[in-house]
Length: 113
Length: 115
Image (cartoon, rainbow over all chains, first blue to last red; front, side, top):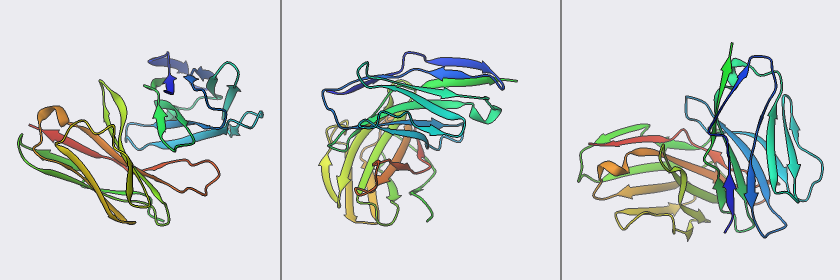
């Protein structure tokens, strides 16, 4: 069965600095998608970034980028120029061909002014 | 589009009462998912539907929980009878098969408190 592991329950970063959130997953499939979702205090789940497993190029969305290492089954999220509005719970997620999505336990990110 | 709509946003009920949570997916989406979120267990997938048909309900905790999707624009999650340990935030999400990434769009959630 697929699993998603986020080893950092909480992290803090100074405003304007860069932070990297870790995620590893386990799967025997070769075709899948990976996502990072953000959940601010409003509790709305917001998609931050997605990565197709067949693409070698790392996805980028403005200040958010990923480091996708398929062989290592690693999918980390880098947030550059951190802003106060980035404070939230971040979930790494894996979606397999059977369409079931599996979430990690989440990493709570604090932004220090 | 208004996004995924859930109602009610908050529900407080007494143990033993029936609770019904409602979800309207994004128009045109053919997958619908129900999740439960608690501090202890994180986000749990309860059940999901494809074209109104339940595909996997292995996450439904027990027989007190049931879900239906009578048509493409409406789904319900029912708990009968409710218990204090059912207190959680329940999310509904939808997705579209032919999108490139199968990303899921979440509703705002329903916070359920069972006293």
